Length: 503
Image (tube, rainbow, N blue to C red):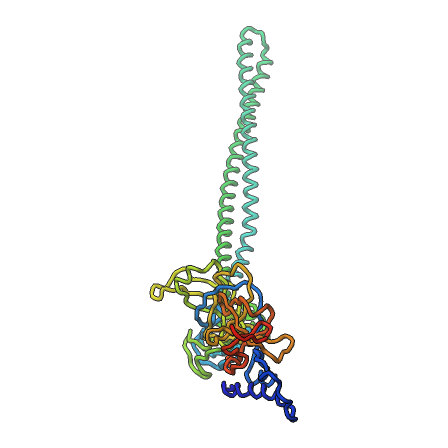
């Protein structure tokens, strides 16, 4: 960086050499004394390079009023992970610090005797599930004929009950007819005494009554037989249905055993999957004729997401206990801005206040979207925590860096010419800028400006600068220190650059 005196000398030499290129003697002086004063300064490419000069443009717009809060960039809680040892054992391999990783990359390998115990549990669960399935198939084979037999007995019992009902109806009819025949015999016997009926007619009626009575006795015997058969079949059907129901209950119990055994196997497999970073499907896939879980001799630990390994807690060939931290991974593509906002400023913020972040070394403000404002103030600091996510796809930002957040409070009602505050410098009682001449890019004009409200690194200009004007940003202080372009006490410059003596 050139010193102020060096920059002054450079500018002075540039200005002097501009008038001393002709080796011939200067013409005779005119009647006026010297060249007129000017507020223009030549800034050649060399001068711009020496001063590290940069430019910024004025613009027309509404001034945004913002509240600046100092804070820091941190890794969001959901974008950092600590990989721990799922089992006790020896670390066979481990990734190096600051190594970039993708999701699924192996970050550590662990050799543990507990892996054999997990595999034995899976074998036991598989054996239990297979035994339960065999018992289920046997029970299902046994219960099918039982169900068929119970169904047949139930049908036979129903038919026997119908036969019983029919026999009862026949008996009732036989008794009715017998009673009618017996009544006729008694009637004929009464008429026999008056000799109105012959003996042969009476004997025939008695014979018919006897036959009908014999038929009623047979119907009663058939009813008793049908009733016995119906009751026996019903008892057999009830027993068969009971046995079938018991078999169905046994099948349900065995099915539960199958489900429990498969669930136990799945649970152990999921535990191994969580420990190894492989899926259950990958562990169950056949490899050399056997499932992959059965051939594993070590546990590989994989990155749950892409990022960078920021911490390595152990070295290879080190014994670690279960749950011991191995590596820490952080995803730098998204960071979080965190700061404390005084409660007095919090009261002025509108809902869903938008936030921009300035980070040292980064020229442009970084939009961070809507800030999340904690609704409860800290009792000690009397401030509220402000948090906002910051996208960092190119990785320029670093967790732990300081940053300044600018919360948008309000926007001015009217549009004005706005310039960056870095383009303004005080010289005595004046605020000045150095405006580039559009017609002569290697010349700047020293312009006093009237300023209005300022906020968020911008300031309103009431006069002296128009929209799209280019202003010196870096290098402005060196230009001021040269004193070139400054009007003397006896006059002032107009907007067109002409000098006017007097006030």
